[in-house]
Amino acid sequence: MDKNNLKIVFFGTPDFAVESLKTILENGFKVVAVVTSPDKPAGRGHHIQMSAVKKFALENNLNVLQPSNLKSDDFLQTLQSLGHQLQIVIAFRMLPEKVWNLPSLGTFNLHGSYLPYYRGAAPINRAIMNGEKETGVTTFFLKHEIDTGSIILREKTIIEPNETAGSLHDKLMKQGAELVVKSLEKIVENKLILTEQEQGDFPHAPKIFENDCQINWRDSAEKVYNQIRGLSPYPCAFTQYDGKKLKIFECLKTDIESSEPSNIEIVGKHQILADCGDYKIQITKLQLEGKKAMSATDFINGLRL
Image (cartoon, rainbow, N blue to C red; front, side, top):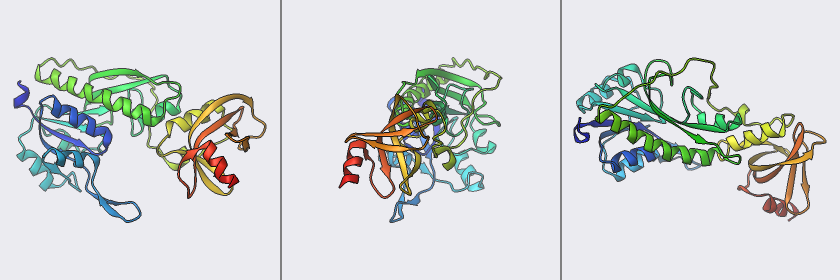
């Protein structure tokens, strides 16, 4: 098949998906429609906000679909009318079988982990929170069970010791976009060699909830350090300080033994130390409720003022 004859429908919503859509277009593939989430009110003013994928699609004169109901007859009829052979899904909600089974070549997904490791909604966060040293990206064809389909391609990447969810997100976003294009090239060249996912007890990546973000200071410093990295910059690990919510974005490990878990103390003009179950961590970037995010030094200066 020639790439000029391949018609693609792209499903995605956030920035993570934009990079792949951009790379697909740059490599000469034809996207006949982009499906993204409906616009919604956001912020204090409740201004209507469009998704990152919609913004990019409109800037590039792509056909945009925003169904509120993926199972509706109207949406299915619109999809069928496009005459496409392939669908790509990246950071989008779960598709009903009628949708993912529609095109002749199927529907493939880009996942931010080295499957079968970290199936689920939060693979980037969970890998760092669990202290993993490596992760990856995977393209695979959708089937009924979530994140279990046949693998097209997968690549590993190193998680650096000071990596945050934000920096790993950006790294995997670019690596994943390249993998999507490599997968497309395999399809058009008829060189697909699918691999079934290994069976076993692999770590999962369930959605992040508020209780995942609250720091338990009786945990080891290593676990708290990984929790803070894995939730930075969003949704962010937090604790209580002076009766207010305190978000912690960055910290350093120390070799100072703890005295009383949950004790947060200011040392000199630049250091904030917090006691974990075994050692102290040094908090270097934080945000007190009602304030903006700032360095430890600026935080200390603000308290003194």
